Image (tube, rainbow, N blue to C red):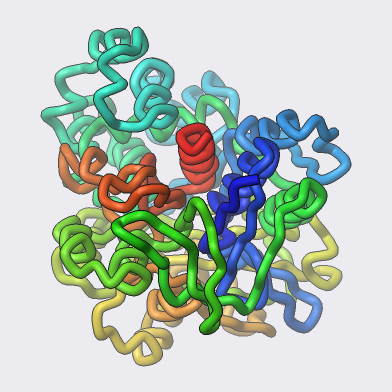
Length: 485
């Protein structure tokens, strides 16, 4: 059995370990933290349970595929429910809308509330869905190399590319698609799904809305952490070995071929190494390869986040599972994040409340709030100093929208800053998605899943192809496992 060492136990690392173990590889996963899951973990405090990282679950077929490969009944490990709404949106002008999964219902409500013609929304989502099926799936499901030339899907994709997808920013494309500022802002938001700026990112990102609005959102019973628990349980059952508190210090090589990993001063031999670690740190810290580390830095980092975990001693019927409170000046918000590298004065606020579905995640008549604002990547910021400022603004905005005195109801608080994200997950500068997509060619400059310079070294996770977010991390795991085998 060929030995594989996987560095990091994020979604992509776990999924890769399962796929390779099922192909009869001897797989060991090395995790620096005392827990498994990378950015996707959880904390408990005074009766409140919080998912600490990603909070949106889409494309459940990605995790289902792993259990199907293992010939296991996924319901013995993991269950989820289909949601009839994707998100509740609150705008600075006081207007609000619930984005229903049913596109017709969503479009009709937008026409009623904002005056946006329903046909505009239906046409936009039809186009984004078509783009995802014809272009997105090609880009996400295959390595970006010369083998694409031989695939029939490539030619289908080329004929599906619309001129505006290449020439316009997402914001410009949305301005030409909608007549109301609310719908433009709502669909601009999807650039943040890979940590990008809608005023610079290409219109091709419009296809992201297809995943949520056309294909639906879901809730994993037990919270997002249940995804990690299910993957770990399956991996252990098929023979994957886990090593926690095991920080990989170096990827060992001989004549540019990997030979293993150095962990806590001890060498573990391996025929193949897969890094689920941020690609910059992989080159810089584990390979001492400053040349390629510097090359990564030529690409703009994605945004990060500042997160509050609040235990609330009351309930709010106005809120659903996913809630967005938009800033009044969206363009200024992204200027602050990407051009000035500062926390926005008035950020958009995201509130996730899993106790709406899992009552045991908060005491009776209480709610667990995951409250997040987009933030710049860490670069000598004093986040402790910024914390109180951003907290005051969030409370002010939510008090106005929810007609409450939120400060009287916060009974538990924990925080996570971009610096904390960097320290806990080895994500360089705390960037959530590695690099941004703020240029037309950004996606093509991402690190590919197989190293061109070190034999038998592979990469998976959000900082490499095809990108960040749970669905793409699952896809990167498949790309790596298929390439290795």
